Length: 87
Ligand SMILES: [Zn+2]
Image (cartoon, rainbow, N blue to C red; front, side):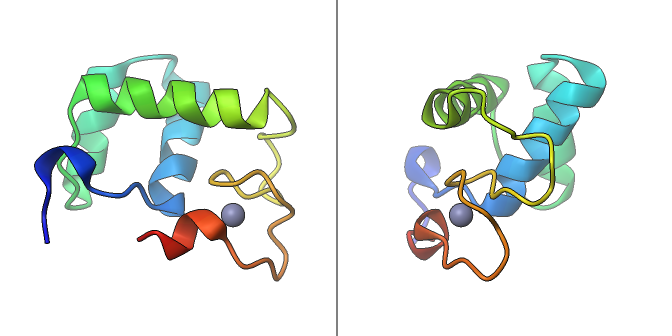
């Protein structure tokens, strides 16, 4: 079930990327390494691409609060995530 390139991104990963970019800046290698520690093999390039996609999708809306889903941008409380279903 593994398509190297097309492995779905989880909301947790999206959150982790956003958090780490805020903490460390756009250190893609560092962020990829950290994701790898939780068992996900991501390349720095794919992390970067994912980040760009997240930002594009959310148009820099309130990503900061934890009350918004980093995957789809909707209020997290009780929402059923469309991004999560693709997993
Ligand atoms: Zn969501």
